[in-house]
Length: 128
Image (tube, rainbow, N blue to C red; front, side, top):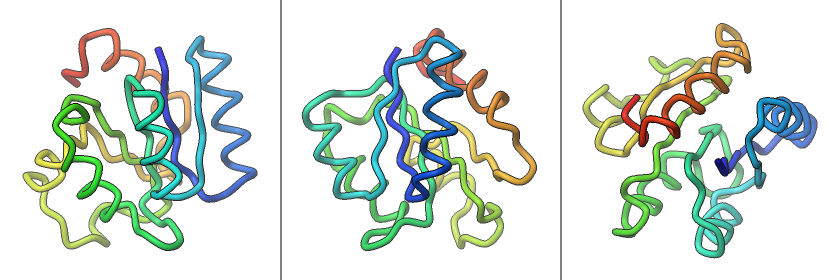
């Protein structure tokens, strides 16, 4: 089970990587949307964990590009952001169209909750 974490904060990236690996998942990390597209092109993950606040291209722009490739349509995306969902002008149907399975607000969602949902989604074929 391979997870790509897209997180611009290097300290948080290390914390998340360690937590996911301790849960038995393989993890690849990157800090930007452009770097993520390059990594996904080389190694397709089973799931993507995305912070929406990215430098250069936002997480929303990443989702537009990510979903523009046919072979990447079934990869589930989990948003783990420090910005609450209501701050974005995106309705639940639009999140679903982007393949976002769940939106987690970091201050109210412990990393272990995210990991459990991601593992379950990968095990169930991303139907979470």
